[in-house]
Length: 215
Length: 226
Figure: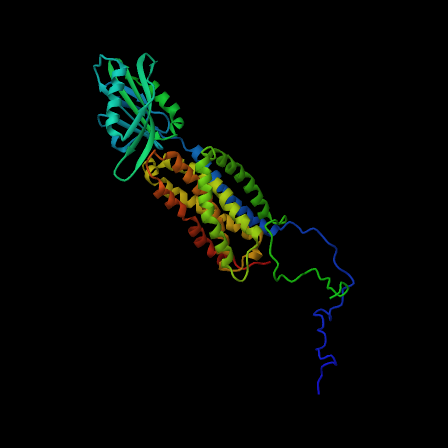
């Protein structure tokens, strides 16, 4: 005996919802409300993101840039360091020779090479160029510019150099400045990563303009 | 089943239903939109600047896409039981590549400057190592949390946090690597091979780091309410 219908197929399956009659009333369609339960954690995320970004920017503005102030270049010559330029630790004690000022990637070296100088600023610059040529793997100088800064004859030249050691090399931009200040031969050398000179050029102009004899 | 016998219940079964990134009722969606608008502005600005080195820019994007596309497919297929919604994954990539990178660029610069003022001797040799991880990992992780707040129903296991974290990190590393490549191209002296640093950067670490950090997020935030 078989329970199968005459055509040999099982009875049709009952729809899964056959026992559930269609309700006579369905709620009207409404726009879903703004999910206020997620507002607090979302604001917390926004606060963290804002804290990381705006907090850093605000703190950066709030903290004044350190400055080395007035530094002695040797003899009676001094210079005002621009905001953000600080003495390298080795020079903080006021050791002789070159002083080194730093700001971010920027380096400025300055010194008085001769305290009873009778020559021209161009000769000081030529000596600087010669020294740099011997210390760099490759260097090219721009045109020399003769100017007068204050009452001091000054010669400047920008350069691009490849500096390297046994493991790495880098290209740097820079500027050489040679000045004669009240019989003192003053030399300044500025170095910074390639393409970044614009970020410190105003500082360099300000510092070069501030070179003077101490009162 | 005929139309007459179809149930009119308003609660459809959720099997196979995937949440969308676009959820107007979720505050986190609007946070995402605002962050994308701000981040997108800075992102486009930087991309335009980098594209001036046209050849390096094109090669950089080809390199990172050759790496990123297989990784994206691999991460997408990791979750064998429940593929994540593609729009949510796109949102994760956008957070990492557009929002987090743009915000990190601003924040890194600011915090590095702060460090330079407070501890200049520390800033030069260690600044990037001190500032970068804190800023970048925080911003990327906030992307995963934002996606969770938009569609928590998609976060029901460690694998979900893993997948979204990996996508955020992937987006970040792709855009960051392009900027590194362009930087390397701009700084490379003539005749000096830069292939070593380029390949080192090319492999990147952001995918790994954010994947690790985010894999545990569902454990801490709990299971979804729906």
